[in-house]
Length: 402
Image 1 (cartoon, helix red, strand yellow):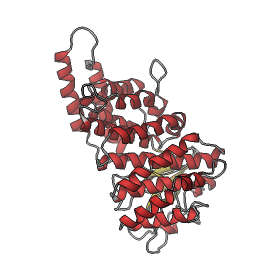
Image 2 (cartoon, helix red, strand yellow):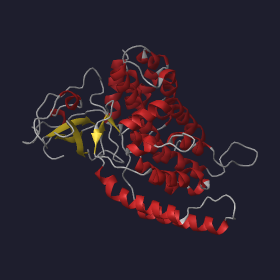
Image 3 (cartoon, helix red, strand yellow):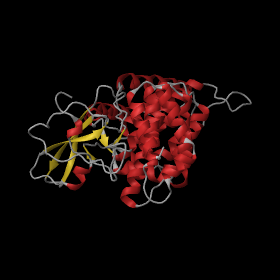
Image 4 (cartoon, helix red, strand yellow):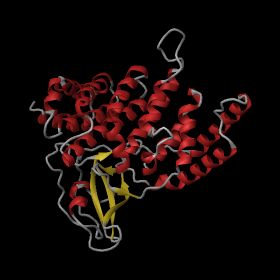
């Protein structure tokens, strides 16, 4: 990040309370985790637009944590708006949502979809067809071509706000979403991964959150049950192909994670929050906890849900997760206690700390204490050498009165 120190920049609250003075005026915001978000003022829209970001090189999968560890001091650039950094009463500092859009390579995904589709065409009778027709394959190819241009423009770090900050989003036609959902949820289970990969890249578009099928089902209404409806070994509840379950669940978690990027996505999350907590529990039961990519996706989704719950409570005086908060707190014990991957444990702690920070009714800090979370935190700090784990652990313990 050159000579710019994030700790000298204003926090996300700045863009909520300060208006710009001219078209194109730029402000750099400390969005947490040593990461900087860049906004420009739009006179026509009378709001700050998120136009880019700079991510700490230690961040993985372009998913940025929400704790400010600080670095050397310096001043903002000459074209930025000055302001005091204010992380409010939150011990974890400025908050950011995770976004999972890296490692996207659309060509192999589209090629795999075409191969599977050709196989389905050869196997199908004149009855119910799972394959895509020529019009649908053309729609999918056009969508992938558009996503290849649009996805790189989506900022990789987005301050956690309710409603979401305005970004340079993109539009996806409902008919194209229907095609992707068909591939991602209705095709043979082992062949769904490429469609799920395309689906997670459409999630930062408000179009995905607004989508409903002919029965009124949202994307998540269709997606979450399809992941858990996996082929089983004869006479058991065990997955016949555990690797496919892990991969498909990982992509579904990334869809959830990316939905937090828009206000429409936030509203869909709010409506589906209880189902999402249940889904997180089921994933831990049926999928391999030693799969790092899966658990990074799991803790990213859990962290986004936790910080959204905090911000929603602050903005509205209530939140959508309700009584399921205690379930989510207990679920976080799994990665914190059982796993040793630094990024996974760190993100789980961030989620736990944000839940403990929720103000008002519900006594969320008390719920965290009652779950014996102080013991988890101390054990995590003892087994991990990573400075981030120790810093965030100590801050949560202080918050809990340890």
